[in-house]
Amino acid sequence: MEEKHSRLGIASFALSLVTGFSLFVLFAVAGMLNGGRVERGGQYPGQMLVGFIVIGLLGADVVAAGLGIASVCQSARKRIFGILGLSFSALTLVGGAGLLIIGFIFVAVHAH
Image 1 (cartoon, rainbow, N blue to C red):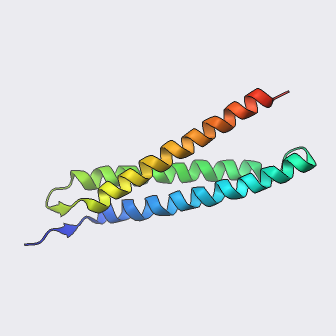
Image 2 (image 1 turned 180 degrees about the vertical axis):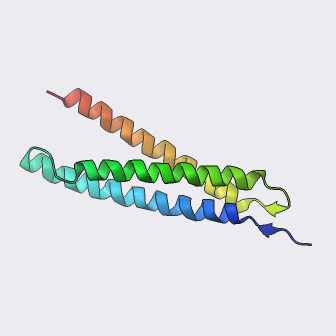
Image 3 (image 1 turned 30 degrees about the horizontal axis):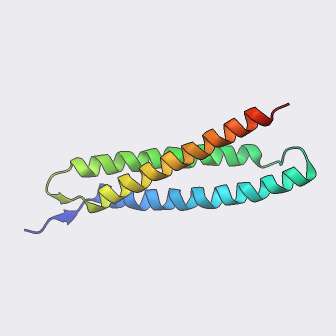
């Protein structure tokens, strides 16, 4: 009997792709908004909203990683989507956290 793909793995893969793409788009939009803020001075109104969305997306990525781990632990199921979902979510988490740390350092250095 042929093994089926794990539903947890498929969910992990799909969620990791959606959150990774969403984070990429959000960071691009935030960069453009920040460019306008630098020209005009002060803060832009959506700054806090962007931060909350980033935290939510990173939380969704943690869920994707958990689903990937659960998928890899299943027996009698194909594990490829679980491995891919876990890998993509781990890369997104490390990259997103790294960008947040760089942002915090930049703000701390340039604070008056």
